[in-house]
Amino acid sequence: MKRIVAAALLAASVGLSLPAAEAQAQSAQAGVRVAQAAPERVVERRRLRRIPIYRPDHWEPDVIPRYNPGPNAVRDCTATYVQEHRPSGTVITPRMNCFWRPG
Image (cartoon, rainbow, N blue to C red; front, side, top):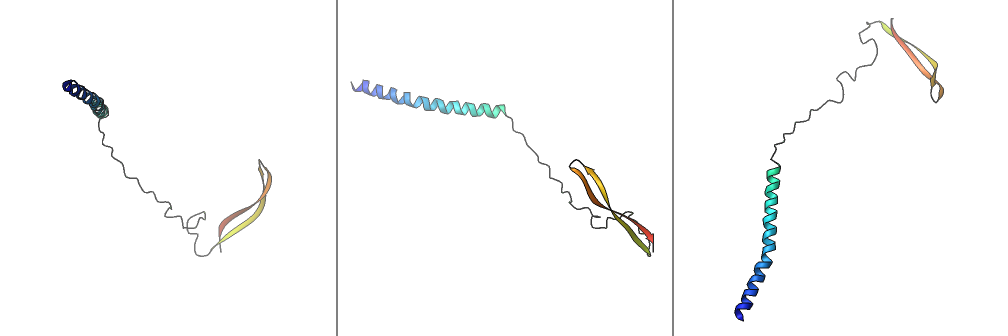
């Protein structure tokens, strides 16, 4: 009788430990499969270029022509109002025309 009980306990302990061992083996095999399926890649990142926001000539006056008109030059401007036809309706906007003249 003791042998039957010992054999039953041994069979039960082996039976309970088998599913855990199989699960570990299957997870280990799955890990091996994943490792074999996806080879390692070395990804190199390029450094981002820094782009300046402001142009070097940004702070120069935006007057056309950009040449030096001379020591005695005077800027002569004429300002008027003009009608502009827009999809929302006709509007009146200011316009300014300037040129350099000898002073």
